[in-house]
Image (cartoon, rainbow, N blue to C red; front, side):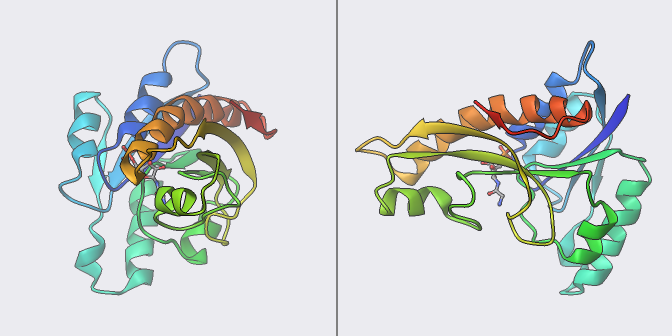
Length: 195
Ligand code: GAR
């Protein structure tokens, strides 16, 4: 059975869907939910689900990114995960961290990559008058939001959409896509999943 560490910064709705999916004959189980924000809503949700939690607050490191990432690595390694799933983890990671977990780290991003790396993806899709938007699960490499794509799901952009209304429509698809890709990844499948 593969062990999965999930990294969050916020409410953790994707984390909950991942944890809920890892039951029965699933090839993986959650071993850790870690947040870089002490008050993140997802921490209480993880505790309620019986998953061990940790906090590594980046603010304690006062701009010392290397110290932050070294601490992150040792706290994560303490739980011996096989797979690291970033789920709304809102810190940019450097090669120090990424190389340590090379080949076993996933991220979900709220756009149809390679479009709209970075932030404010929904506002940018609306501004560009895109007909569709969506989400992507990809392997994490040193290039921001640039690693191999493992899965995508699409939604229409509607005429009256705001960034919030579009985000809500995309988030529903994130909740379907991420558990599906994680299961395949835990089984060693690396092909592209289109939902
Ligand atoms: C999700 O929409 C996720 O795709 C996004 O943050 C949200 C977290 O929601 N991630 C990024 O923007 C990564 N740059 P959640 O905490 O409810 O899962």
